[in-house]
Length: 159
Image (cartoon, rainbow, N blue to C red; front, side, top):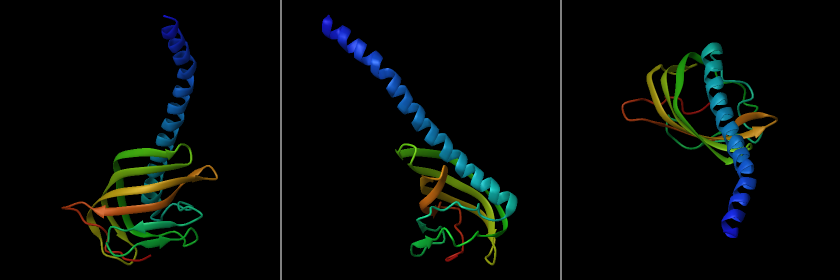
């Protein structure tokens, strides 16, 4: 009986800490989802990538156009589009180091035309991105976009 009481008391003492840990993880999840949605909304509105979206250390990326890994530098400037109507669907975020590093996976669907490249009218990709929190903002550190069968990636092979 004493052992059961001790376990119950220990559980009650630990419960607030567990709830707090889950709360922080849910903050990371909601913040990263919001950053993804805000970045796409910014690009739809301005036809430019969101400023300051890439980590200060850059981002290693596989683009949906195929080819070798690309390196996106934080000082490369904003990418621009002639048209952009992409939306994220089924976003799943996994905190790796809560409040600091997270993996996001989702589908990106719609249409787009990067400036100087052909229109992709049925853009449909799987996206995996690693986000890091720098100066209070979630920024992309690595990414992989791969076309879904029946959809197309971009024709863009370099920035």
